[in-house]
Length: 450
Image (cartoon, rainbow, N blue to C red; front, side, top):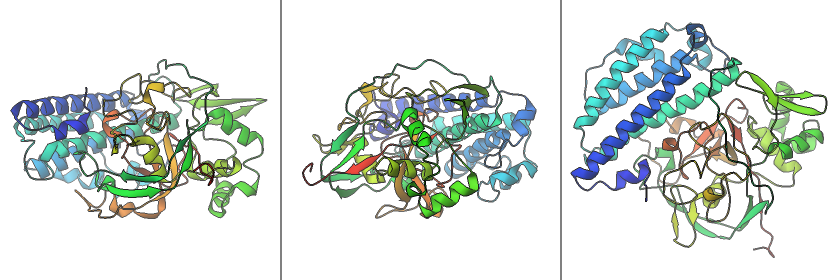
């Protein structure tokens, strides 16, 4: 059985396993840097421009991942003298909102590439000498390397969102995806009962995923697939954006201010729907999961459909709980690494896969495409789990807890497998649409169904 990065951390017992972990970490570092460089392989003007006030210039993201790597691997874990302490303030995401970053004296494209290359060389030196069994929690199991690998993958996904907003064609590769499987049940049943939510064992899990804790849920139904473009188009064409019955007070306010009438990047031409995707205009493929919708749009659709959004706990149980084994799986199908036959992850193509494309990726309850394709909005606010402890810094999770952010789960086509698992929690403001976000619906089971 092939174990993912999370599994390797638990397997360290001797030098052989430690060497295997180091080799895998080195491979992941190389792979994620390849993504970052590919997404910034463009003319300098495109890299330094701000394509939306919602996003940073691409060159800021490029140098930021190197600065983050220097801060955590070289300084905090390796005890190495700072290389460029004078730029720390420029790349502190909490000091400078995205809209202000173009005015900062940030590194240009060539200097940013030299800087991150210099940092990476020293990071590999630290990796060569590190002990995976070190009791320090930052170093134990290679956590600090997992921290920077996942962080860079998250910025790579942000870069893809920026490239989509740029409207420039020819910058993002695409590929073929498996065909879909129409038909079959539209929803799956999850019986009442407890499950263990979160994790206390995965060595690369973030603080907001910890600790594992029991949650007892009543019975419910959840969509077998994410909501597709055809279903969402029916909502739009039924006047969904014009009917106040489907919109909460906050959603209606967003609707009036945004003047949205369809998912972001959709265009109506006569009787057909078109979309702009990485600089090209094409028909909306009706068998794909809908993406680029905000939380308010997802909530309104669910209400129109006579359903609701699943809670975060409902989503995680349907995705990762194995009721026979009585334990959580790393992925919906089990603990084996994601592969091309199980999920649409890691930018295999620049879009979601057709509904039903991955039957081998089904969860124990029969829900499909819960990992990959689109981030899925849930009904839940981003809150700490019971017993939460901030690590290694408050600004990763703790400062975002509260009613301002909603939780997304599952990972999109642009997310890398190294940064995706059944316990992973993403969060964003409910107005965000530029992210690769979609959703699926749920409903409570009746007494007869239960």
